[in-house]
Image 1: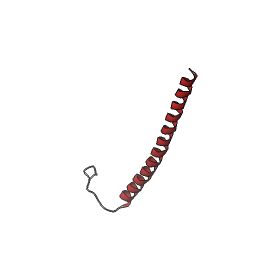
Image 2: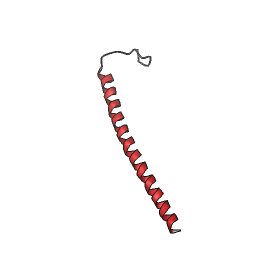
Image 3: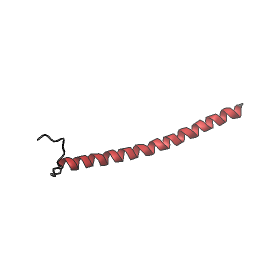
Image 4: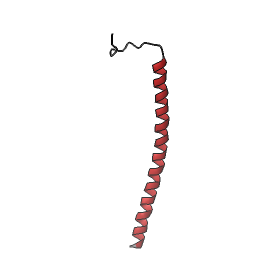
Length: 58
């Protein structure tokens, strides 16, 4: 019985360690992509080209 409890605790510990690594990696991917998207929006906002969108008020 004791070994079953130790095994379950070890499996939970390993699972939480893997989830922690995944969340840490995904956080940095999300942070970098948010910065790149923000820079893209700034460049698009300050560029002088007119795209001719149909949503523009005439």
